[in-house]
Image (cartoon, rainbow, N blue to C red; front, side):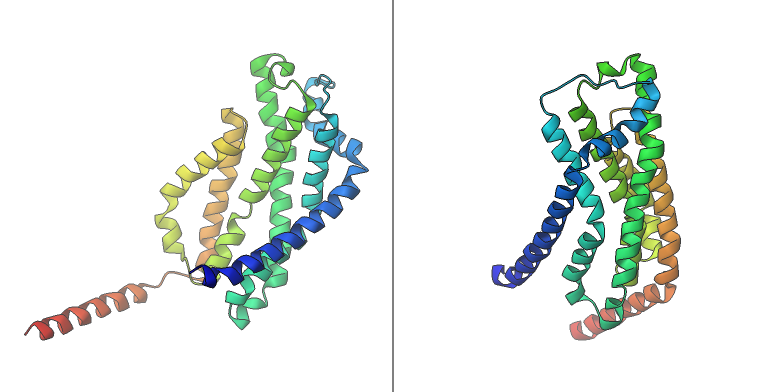
Length: 256
């Protein structure tokens, strides 16, 4: 069994290695602009409190390194998605392999769209709620490093969440899901979405709703998209029933 998996693990290591190298290269470039990037990251919060709420800390170097790596990841997104495609491409049919450019382009766009939504909507509203509740933002954000950690986590979470239509589109294209599967799974999907929102956002209801709401909407959009590429066919159920009835008749004949 391990021998069968070994080629896939070697290929996975290769694709991860290429992605990591590109991220590191972009991270080194971003490190030279880390002050501007940190100011950009702080902008939604500074606008709420009319000033810089953070106290000093000795971890500023690691904060700069953290935000630089995250920026490097953002700029490397096309390469990362192209490596994901290169990993799964051997298992695709020839007519499916031509979707590499749409996959990389749309995946990159949706990830950036998710981060933009988080930056301009979720972070300002979420922290404004916390500010109004706590009365002083320093009470729950002591250092810049703590904020950058939450900031990158939220942006990454929303970027990943906005990949949902892309993932379901390609699963539908491969025939692994249809619109009926997604409709039947809707109730469970809502529960899973709220669990994910609770894990990826600060512990306040507003931010969690701001993540769960768009995700539920994206899931609904995904149902429409999958219906276009792989609609549910009642004939499939009829064929399965015919197969079952044929098997039952064969068993009855064998028993006789």
